[in-house]
Image (cartoon, rainbow, N blue to C red; front, top):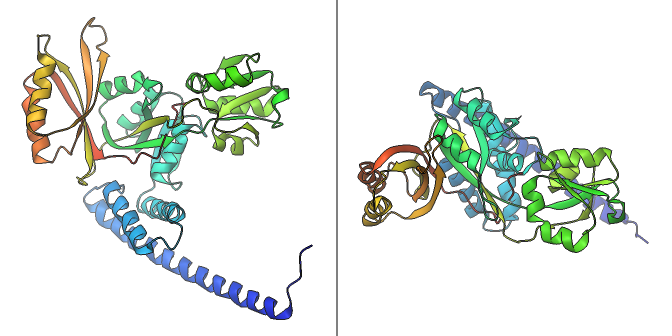
Length: 372
């Protein structure tokens, strides 16, 4: 039985709550002052047509905040708070429209809000091609698309978009995955069908075979569509994100049913301007090689001589040209770094086609995500 506070304890509690209210008012006043300064920065940037988004500066701000804090306030909570403050101030400079591979509550949506905060207007697009088209035509400011998953591999449609559209890669983010089995009741014995995106089903295959071997699975276009279906049909369960469960008022039957811990999806941020060098960057290229013996070696040799680390190379067949391939390449460093610039120029002569896709800060690997 809970004991009641005595008069002295009530008085102390009232004083402490009054102090909390005073601190909150001070915080609001400081946030308003910060917003005014951010708006002035926005007016200054507007004169040069510079983008409000500056991931290098934003990362510096977060790092400085964590240094000032010295661990006294929970660091993860502090980072979330200031990420949203930065997002709101950036959006006040110039409201942003961010397109993503929809619908809402998918992992791509989660990646978009993780990168930009919740202040921008988020616009779900029905497919990857639409995201590229909307960015290229400047109907949206940025796009977010999956490019590779640590279990399922590369997203071919994204590689095609990088080739076909006049955009720049201006950022990346790695997102952790957590696939939950969710339905209206929260009970496993009511499940007659399981719906999800094909990648989500593939990533949970072992768990499903072990725990629900007799229940049929069906592929749908997204984890969000599966959750919406489960919200209206008590016999259906969805494999989806925790965000989908909260959004569609569903209950969790089983948490984190993915077969492999550490599964990660890398998402690209599409735009038109690349950030300045941060000192820890990545440059993406798309190229085609001459059809001669040793052409791949001649590509790699100048990079090695310049001390440039090749972090990824992925081939993709050239459309309508059988047995010819494009190569998607990531290298460490920014195109404005002298050794990177020289390395790219050195390999250009051996390429029949070379496109600089962008240079941007290396994304923080948060541990693992899905493309659904």
